[in-house]
Amino acid sequence: MSDTNSDRPGTIAVHGDHASRGGAVVAPIYQATTFAAPSNEEFLDAANREFTDAFYTRYGNPNHSQVGELVAQLEGTEHAIVTASGMGALSTMALSLLAQGDHVVLQRTTYPGTTSFITGLLEKFGVTASLFDQVDPDSLSAAMRPTTRLVLLESPSNPLLDLTDIRRCAQLAHERGALVAVDNTVATPVNQRPYSLGADIVWHSATKYLSGHSDVSAGVIAGSRDLVERIWRTHLAVGSVLGPFDAWLLLRGLRTLDVRMQRHNDNAMALATMLSRHDEVDRVFYPGLATHPQSALAREQMSGFSGLLSFSPSGGAARAERLLDTLRLTTRAASLGSVHSIATRPSAMWSNQSTYRDQQLGDTDDALIRLSVGIETTDDLLEDFERALLNTSTSE
Ligand SMILES: *Cc1c(COP(=O)(O)O)cnc(C)c1O
Image (tube, rainbow, N blue to C red):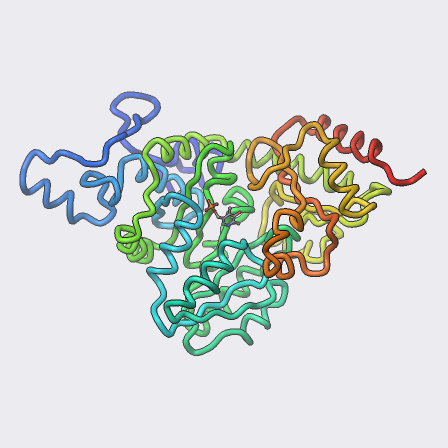
């Protein structure tokens, strides 16, 4: 545990880092690419120390160290590093841990960028991959081979909010000698701590909830000190470097992660409940609902259910689009995890990417709306959705 004597996310988010701030309550932005050393000994030390943040910014910068320390505390891991995006985190991690001839197992439904990096790009370098059905841990065992080095999990998944039994899948992967990495972007450490469920690596698109305001692209990789050091050595070569100012903004976002997530959780639960009872809504997908097919698992491995939900209004894709036009508090945009409520129709977003579409959406209809619920006042969101559903009603 940290010196804060608390393992609760609200306190950690505010006190979990110990970087020197030179007397200022908020640490400065080290907007510098290189660092001076007063002597040759100190120069050599700065250049050769693992996770150095006093040599050259691609290796590390005090703003990186500070965010990394805080994320490690929040995820309950020994160490964490930051990258320039979530994809930067995934690609750095994969290039570090995999070699020609290795095999990866990943979920059929996972972030489309993850699928395309692992099954598309890595194939050129002789790394093969198999998919498994995240709701069925036995299908993970079936997909594993003697050469499987890495199993990639993501829970809840997007846009259908299926869950992966992280503890069970980690156990099955470890029995066969593979490492387990969990994309914890959607749940966040406030709601779910995959490291304590057996994951070796926890990674994020910090572009989403961790920074939380749609103004920073960033990624993080957290795990044991040894494993993160191995990945950091690859990071030096890959060069997915987060700018110091963006690291500072990410830290600023993290300070309020716990309070933001409480509101995201509350708002999504309230909206999912209202929508699930509405006559003109055919289906609602949210792990916090008692009607979610994995509701027991949700309660076991999550302490809150986050701000992402999906639903299909009656009346098909045309009605769904009219609904998006009519809503006042949602923005039609990609991405998730921001203070703003963001809504999209995934089948439109992925309309020219048929593989993702078929893979991610399964048998759902074109009316499906994915909603990243913001932190607006709950009653205003409820009223906005009630009004928009009424004004676009298809029944007489
Ligand atoms: C956005 C996202 C990513 C990719 O992150 P970027 O910061 O956009 O590179 C990975 N996983 C999930 C679950 C995401 O939502």
